[in-house]
Image (cartoon, rainbow, N blue to C red; front, side, top):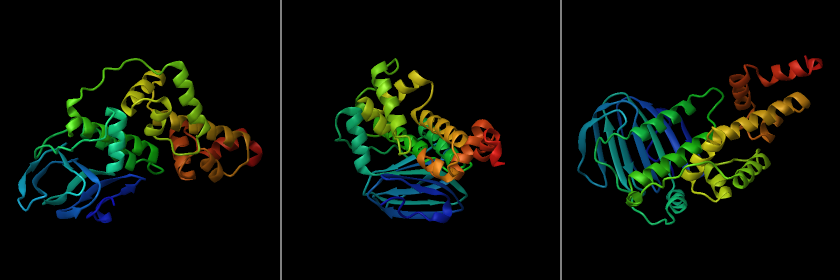
Length: 287
């Protein structure tokens, strides 16, 4: 169960298979919950009177600065109260997914989360939260694969920084994907363009850890995996728009977009034209 204790009126929230993300903008309020997911919460605005308790009746009260992070391991009892307008990003992640990522990154899935001290500022988590916020605000709707990629990066950061696995140094890896692996990954992307493609899936195809794969993919293509997938979808969709008379909703579906509105917004942002305008330009008889 995800996002327990949270009101939908506080702002948009998106549920995925084994994670959920919520962008909160709400006036003074409080929250109490116990849930089975791990919760990561980052302040997108300073909160001068932040009151919080984790598995205790004793509450800590003080300033939560911009970029401060709170972590509640699964099954924790959580209470929080704030006295002014609050802006924050909350990520809930299923323990099974975090264990799976730990296994892929560290060759072992036994670990303990170690929440930071009150008011601790995490610049990387803050940056990731801002990227998630932009995704929520994207015209045409949020891209779930992009958001899922952020969740994976976020989760690995939490494992490396706030768990017993932090004792393992980050591997020093340079260089891109070898040609044979790159061709295998590329063929998998184009062969499954209509389905959900996550960093975890693509890393498994490459037989690499997600963080190693992400770095090597960027080195090879100059793009992140989800940016490459979106570009591939756009090109495939544009080709179908130009060469067929298939309904745009059908083209969006077979090229992996969540809906026609999402495809339209991305095409307009990329080429300055909607799919209908592109079709009329190449097939004047449809005008």
